[in-house]
Amino acid sequence: MTGHIDPGEAPSEAVIREVEEEVWLDIEDSNVVLQHVTHRFSTSWRTYVEMSYEIVWRTWTPKNMELDKCSALKWFDLDNLPEYMPPENQFYIQAYIDNDTGYSELDFRSH
Image (tube, rainbow, N blue to C red):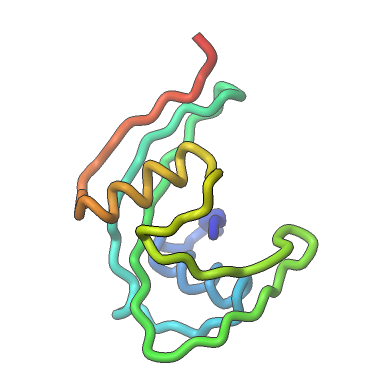
């Protein structure tokens, strides 16, 4: 999931809002834990600061609320991920697996 921070909104508030908007899950602030911060240069030469969060919940039946942007929601075990994922997603998942809760810089610009 991805999203933008609205004016006047804290990053953790944006996570809660985006999760509710995109997958119809109501989570509490205490269940949102910052995992990793990444400064990423994209191929379009734009610069992004991305924050990865771990979200803890008790029960959840996901509901795809953005059918125009997402064709399906699926769970994958960390040791059985899809064959193709965007490089930045591979990086974020590996940082989670490695328990890397720090800061990284990624550069996907053409050199």
